[in-house]
Length: 306
Image (cartoon, rainbow, N blue to C red; front, side, top):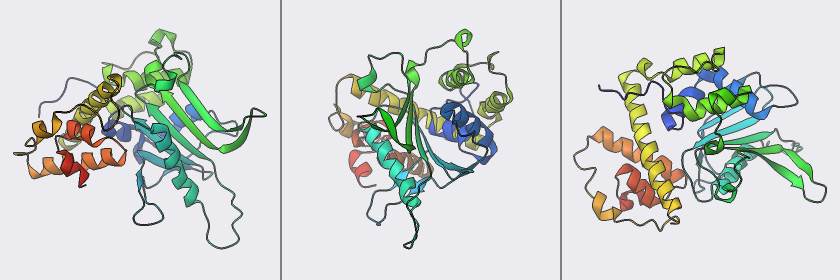
């Protein structure tokens, strides 16, 4: 099987992100990243337990949520970690909605529960810039909590939303000062490296580079990564182009329907199923049907029926 020339995977792909952060084997990598991101005053995260990433509403007909990574630490605090590849209408609304699931999960049966909740962190690593923040070139690390407008003090500190606008991080290797700087530099540039940079040589990064090395993957893993990379490139290009052109969801100009009507004919059953699975995940994430059609080659009517 012919392989791409890149030495390391792109962490902004579904495969790449879950390979590096979403497996028991690489738990130490995620712990190190979260500790740098949160800088918790009450102590560092010591251990994590991965939880099911699929969550159903209270009723069968309720919309479900599928997180990229969902885990809890030794204190029972919950972490939703999402890699957002491209702009999405109402992304902030979606992240707020996602945080309601770990809140509801903590409800205890019976009349004795006192409503005490464990902290919840919703983390978005974004491969785009919020439209309302485009003029602010400096702030890329957003930490959001409920606060009292009158006193300007935190009202509730157990619900935290953290967003990293990665395109705003522009430091070169020579400018890296902190371990957090190094993490962001690595995430943004991993797939462009030929060898690990001099400043990224500690044990956690060495382990990450080893796990990210494409040459180590089986043919099956490589096939999954290649598919994930194609979806990432097509989806990002389609969505970013739509937003930059001022088109809103549902109004993307598209000669698409007739053009792609027969694209999936001639594909193997396995390939068809893979495209359908990708379309389901994108639809679940709130991506426009038209854009999903662009990224997968499925017809709009087929996507709407999923």
